Length: 393
Image (cartoon, rainbow, N blue to C red):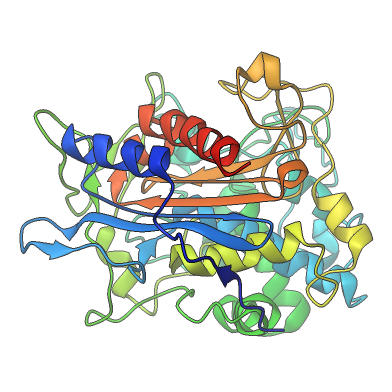
């Protein structure tokens, strides 16, 4: 199923994109970045800029390996949908059918079923420890791992801790970003009867030729150093450091070293590593309705708004599909993206989007949190992409 994405002769020739990247580096908002943009299946911008490791002056390269954090979610979501396509899993299966021990209850102790579809669309009533207000939150008290720390738990132990905390709302009655993708990873393991890393390789990354994407990396591979936004410039992210993505949330405990531990439990929501080029292969396969990856009706289901009627916090105009957000209203979102654009990011400093109407796929991996995920750079890059697209005619 290897598809080569054509590379045009004008690569790195997108003036506005390059200016946006160079400006973020010059202003020391980012340490390093890889940005790849494709239009109608042809790469028109491919840039590695800044440092993979500033202290040793190691330059960023296009094949830089990044800790993916939530960029793992669309990969694991596609794996589950491949199983649906194979007839081994159904979107409306109850999770307890596959994971009999996973039965979280509502605060009033009611036992309510969760479906695979609700896991994929983050409407299952689950939460994230890092979104709790303080260390007294139910998931914190249960000792839950968000998948980015160096926790010595197993996937099964973490699931039992997640299930011990009350659901935040009845499944299907709301939208909330959550550990659902980690639960989904456990379902994928159970269906194929193999560890998640092997399952993802067989279902998604090997067929698409995403050779650098997996759940761990060796120390001699091209893994980029993680940095955290600071003044006057970003500093290396410390092992075990807690950084909050926004006020009011307790924040994420990070273990940059986790990527080198092949025995770390496989977090479907945050545990993978990979390259920008690998992710582009996956996004382009979905955008082109590549039937070798998934049948068209399943891709259509993936890019349908499953959060209709619910507002996503801090994302006006966006709904949610099966694994990423979907733009409902360009005006509400104040965005040049076409309605129906898919978008998400990753806490280590990444953003990506696909505008199917414009036949556009863009991946921006940076090594600087949170500027590269939710900072000024994300908006500047988005606007630059559309300016360059207009210039291309």
